[in-house]
Length: 92
Length: 236
Image (tube, rainbow over all chains, first blue to last red):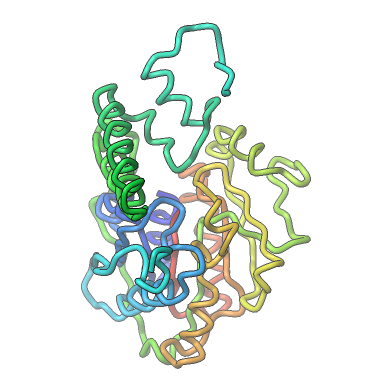
């Protein structure tokens, strides 16, 4: 909820924002009226991806930044890729 | 063996509750306290089933899937009975320039700070993660402190403390909650025009009213003064 409040205050102050929310918190941007959100199906405490999975982390950040150009009042998009890239999978 | 917190008999409910800031505190699984007995039993039965299959083929990804799906269920269920904030309006601003020309700041509720710049919550020096978890109720009543983190700060100079979420992963790699590496790469590759000189972090377990009414407006002023065009936020 904290980031939802910060997003709302920044947007009202004229600063466009995007937040990266895990699926467990997907209700937050909807209920709180957040302008732009990317939803990752990641576990708690790992919103960007697994530790040291730099490829996935960059993909998530880039997908979120792309939403900043949305001119719709509310844009909530699910990140379509799994938690780990194949390269970061321990059994790969 | 874990010592019971009191003399009362161990029940499924008291066992599940003990993961929520109790004798078995585990912030990955603190949601167990929100489950009914039936749901908690389903969680453990399912976990052991997945564990048996993992013993056979070594594919632990199904254990991750089990944790994720139950987190998703627990946090999205019974929303109307929780004291969640809900708003009908959507405050909204449009990015006034192409992303490739924009100065973008990173703000996260991860609880990071730079070594030597400890926000010292409640005036306590060197508060540990264990202490932060024990004082979660006080954090939730206090107003948050914003830590400024120069974006070229080496990872080994970052510190993190947050009583509300499992910090294990971010201790291994701060980029899972504070994606400075990705932001620097995207600046280098021209996806964004410029990464703002400082990133910002605060402990998201905080007074929502103090944040909304008093603190966040000051942060907005600071970001505008830094001529930030857009902000990427990471809740934990």
